[in-house]
Image (cartoon, rainbow over all chains, first blue to last red; front, top):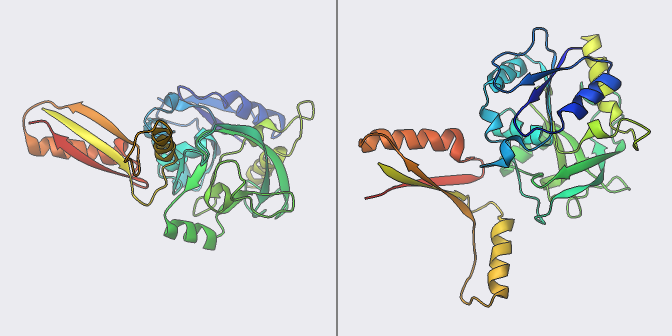
Length: 232
Length: 80
């Protein structure tokens, strides 16, 4: 496994992503500067970390999405390479056109920093194979703009193609659309690209990996990636 | 040449910030305000005086960066 974690000015979760990839997946991630034009040779996973790239100026992720390195990330994704965008990374993937839709201001206008319950919508992707379908996992969120939206036909397409990765759920497993953290349509917390090789998600699995700190439900995502890339 | 680019949310897109501002105006006692939608204004200075090429450059700027056309629309005004 050869992950590359992209560092933009204003990213602040890149070391959390590096740590999770190291501790859970046993990888030695390379941190790549946004102004570079190429990914390290042999890169098989690109991670766009959380944070506030460019201070969220203009729109969250808008300026980072136009960085030099994003052409290389686009080419990597086009070849079927795995890309994971967490929080600001999800916003960047949407702004870059690698995922459809957009993340707008939370419905209640507040920055939300707390634990949420996520329902794993499918367990047959490189990102979720260590979970089971309909697992409820505890993962933290920390964002002001996580309200996923897209036009009706895009949402219908995502739903019919099974491209919802995670939804905000209640303890009984039902979808938490009205009480969810941000008002996202259909409780959407994360989505896949058409070929299921790009995942964008608002919650932070990289922060729930160590029992000393709290729950470890985020480990499954990194175990999945390690397993998928080992098998490849 | 000077131009102003105005980016606004499409009418179908909810604008919680605009709603909050609307509520604040109401609580300030400003009467007659029916609704508020928030947008962005960019004042742009362009080299040269060719209107057509300026329009082309601004369209490119909007499509590539200034607006997210999934949720926003834009219009360009030139200063006379």
